Length: 52
Image (cartoon, rainbow, N blue to C red; front, side, top):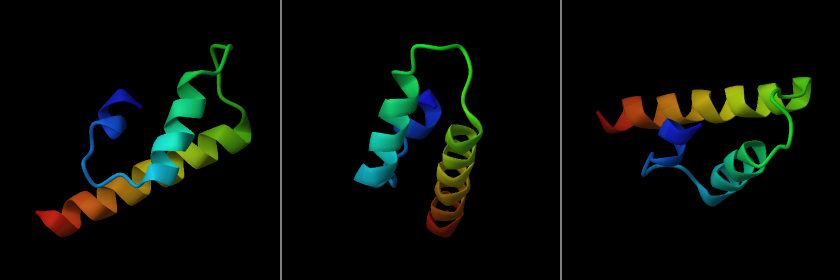
């Protein structure tokens, strides 16, 4: 999550999702949280590959 937060191409909505996930008071993510994180990772990869 830290690496994703450093991405310059990350939209505010994705930053908000990462912030929420980072503030979770448990050592695991729920199924929905894992899917959200996976989606943000996928979108970040896509936007990074488009800028290369």
